[in-house]
Image 1 (cartoon, rainbow, N blue to C red):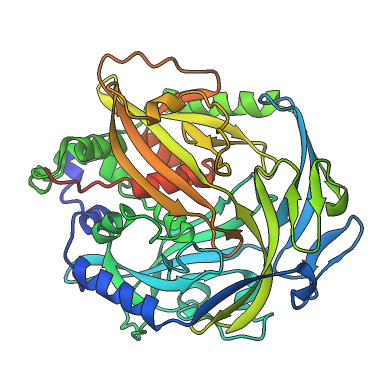
Image 2 (image 1 turned 45 degrees about the horizontal axis):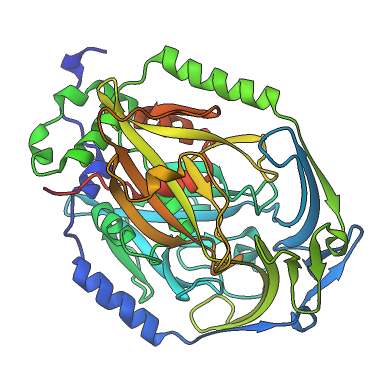
Length: 477
């Protein structure tokens, strides 16, 4: 291929991100969101395990599961590993082997790609209602094990209608809380007219990124799908020097750095070096995950109301009863994992060899399907009030200091269908030129072009992907 073959490049995702006006303004979105909050009838009440309808402790080893054998179960595991400072521990973990669908429907309006987003109630959300993908459903949900309604717009993701697949990837969820959990992350484009629904709204990617700067509005499932957006195809990367630059004239310095980092054609030798590093880690780490009864977990206490750690740290398993007027089923009960405080997930970035790079860390967690995943520079769980968080390497860069500039800082909720009030502070910071970052073992600098390629192969964990979803390519000067 030669530069003469480039011609004009469409880059629909980038153009959508540069569009802050669409079918609706941002003011109209926030008005619609407030109306959805006011119109919903949502009630979430904590209940003892004995009051969970169709849930019970059963089996050998003992676990908390649904009568149907579907949905998910809460099980116990004993973990031993050669990685990290803690070689052995026991904990509850969610086993949800079904692969769900997280799908966003897109359609062009006036030449700009729009994303159909849903206002969805989840019992664990701190503010109940957040913005989710068009379809967010487990296999048990969309096959109607619960005897409820089929999710709205499901047909676009399971049928063979007049649609085009833009993204279709299997991606993991929290390896510290889920046992080998994956969901199908999809972005589908349609040219057909889409029947409107009051709980759904069309937004440009640029509008979505501005919403992501607000705390606890865009849910985790939306963020993981958005992290898979392919802004640049291989052809786009090759032709980047031919792209008309006038569309970027008003974008500020960091957004330009992001686009340059994302559009740089990765050197094959560099990519091979990353894969070799990951392979070496996988071969060198030993990990064993053995099932245990939930009532015999070392350091954990099972009562009628909760399964909690004796120290009061980490998380606990609780039961809730739910009533929701806008869901496929209007009432149900289920277990949730309750979390304390607010955790921290952050990427340290810096210009390296003329291109913006992200300091990626290797993460070993008991629920990882293949032992090691790439994660953010820093990932630290929340702790109860009055408890000091454990020290984490490089965490000092995410406190106020002269060596870094904060690029992104917002608190977002994690999976509200499985976690109760689980929140993380998501941060991206840039180390200033001349700052000598002492890179610890298990970390490596990567460009966004390399990262985007690796995401396609399910090599980045959900915390890292959530951060990539928050990156705004349209910050204005």
